[in-house]
Length: 88
Image (spheres, rainbow, N blue to C red):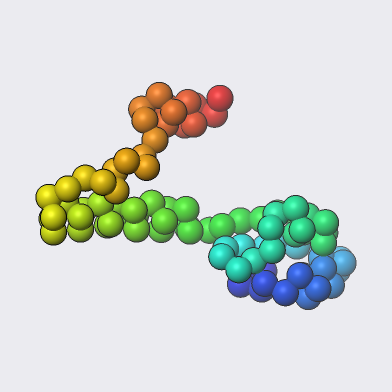
């Protein structure tokens, strides 16, 4: 169910005959509340990739406009990134 932030409506739909999957994002109830409402699966679709591209765009704009690198300070170091990608 993409884009439905109303927890009561979600709970009513989750009570139906089929498992309910919810596509969540900003403004949606937290995962714990969705699970308590009976949601079977929570997805964020392409939002994580879109967020990463937005961070890349901000860093590129900073570099091109001011020649500085401050937006890169929040990045994961190689060890943390490799660990995350390895699933450990």
